[in-house]
Image 1 (cartoon, chains in turn red, orange):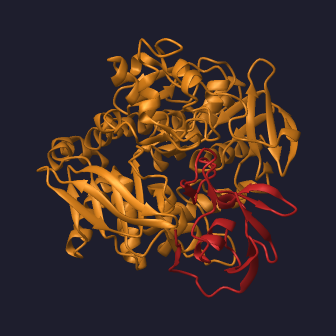
Image 2: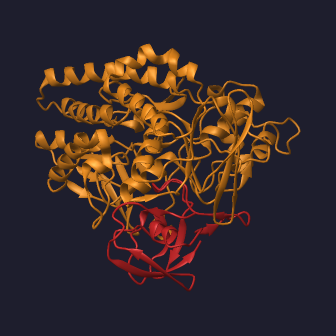
Image 3: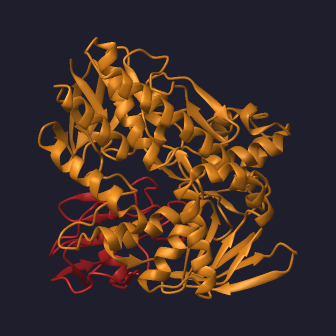
Length: 91
Length: 456
């Protein structure tokens, strides 16, 4: 899944890491926006299979955008602001 | 008197504002960081907050609600990023968690303004990255300035389908198609009642007309077949038109939804009885127009108490706060309360027409192919639910929804049935040969959302 920035797309950049890869995001992004606009494609895998997932509801209900942030633990990417230097792992 | 208001959307904001105007500063609990609710969700800084661009026709209403929220926040005991995960009506206590820290909040009266979320039917392939709810597609645009794709398809039925499609086209991501499962004739038949809605109805017509005029492909009375996709995204939607012809529309994202369902888990845990509303095709907690419930000291307002929309939610929030004050023998403007009652009653009539224009396609849900993933948390398929209705199933027949949940784990996952619940009920009811209201509803369980074990 690729989020496309249509508005306010020239905010100051922040840098994150996802599974060892660099991701360039923008101030004001949620973690979900930062990762999926930055080319992550997906955020986790189903607990009961190999399917990839990337969140569904974007309002903190479906719990299908869980990622792990070093220092924060497991969070909902849609409800967590992206911060500079965050080290993120899928799932 | 200590009043707790849960939720800072249109209903919660007006409830708090009304309490403050009568000298009561409530505890105000909100799961997200800001007020406005999902409908008037504000982008975080440094994204721009231009109301006209963000909220279109609703800009004035959004701006008014935000200024009411900003004024009320500093005068109430405002607790953002706080999840109320349990409510104990006998001891009148709320259990909350915020940033991993748990707390117990005592109250004399509670107003639950917990809102709603998209009502979803799982279409084969709906777990692919790039498939979202209609509400999610709107939140991405409104709150993050992002589109879920460059050429999305929007599928479903209801006012949000057309609004989101219009907003995407205006923002520079014209939909590859807008596909409505409701036939045109159904909407036409509901038109006389919809005219009661005045401006709301006119806006709906405007969006549809605008999309047609701008060459966006539109089809009504469609049946979805499946969503094609791969590891990192959606590639196409296959669907059937009203005449039964198959189509394949290429797209890079898909937003789907069929109206809304109340977020009523806390009302359930508070012991408020529910009834099946045949028009909304939802289970709804019992309350009167003023938001009073059969459980003393517990009040409901907004979409969490049955879908009514943002405008009604604001009125209901005000009215529920007045009901709390009346119960405490605080003098209120009874003429204002009566005026609110009249508007709320009129709003309910329009809602009935709206629901008739966009009925929930129960048959579509009931007839999902056996291999469709129904419960995305647990990876359960429609066949797994149907099996629980069979006499020779290893545990015997599941005669109602909670037993089917116990047997199959459908609705037991981390979303607690918020996404699969509506369709699971239709699949089970059809398998049992029962009307959907006869097989019950998924009971709410604490915590209403996952919390760290250390916090419980």
